[in-house]
Structures are given as C-alpha cells and as structure tokens.
Image 1 (cartoon, rainbow, N blue to C red):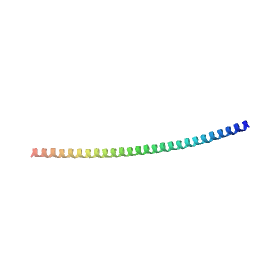
Image 2: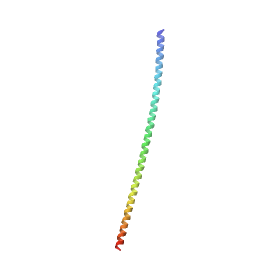
Image 3: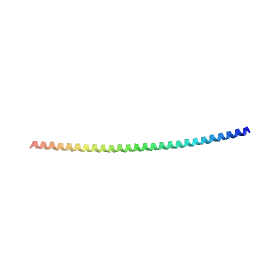
Length: 95
C-alpha cells in the first residue's frame, strides 16, 4: 500500500515538473522571439538613419560643388571686368 501511494505521489511530482518545464521553455521561446523582433527593428531603424545621413551628405556635397562653381564664375567675371577696365584706362591714357 505504501509503495502504491509513494509511486502515485512520485508520478504526480514528475508530471507537474515536466508541465512546469514546458511552460518555462515556451516563455523562453516567446522572449527570444520578442528580443529577435526588437533587434530586427533596431537594425532597420539604424539602416534607415544611415541611408538618411548618406542622402544628406550627398546633398551637402552637391550644394558645395554648385557654390564652388558659382564662385569660379564670379571670379572669372571679376577678372574679365578688371581686364576691361584696365584696357579702357590704357586707351584713355593713350588719347
């Protein structure tokens, strides 16, 4: 009789521990999936931020290039105007 009762108690204890372990494994899997999703979202956000920064750098470089070109054009115009003025002064002095 004692053996039957002890066997039953032992069987119930083992059954409860397996069910408890299964729940723990399921919670661990769920937590891992959530962590994986959060990491994936963070990677997407970082990638988007890098892409945005790259686009802004490209825009700045383009604007800087345009500014340099306009500065060169303005310098050429000033040089041409100075040459014209010098030529006019030379002609005025000759006359």
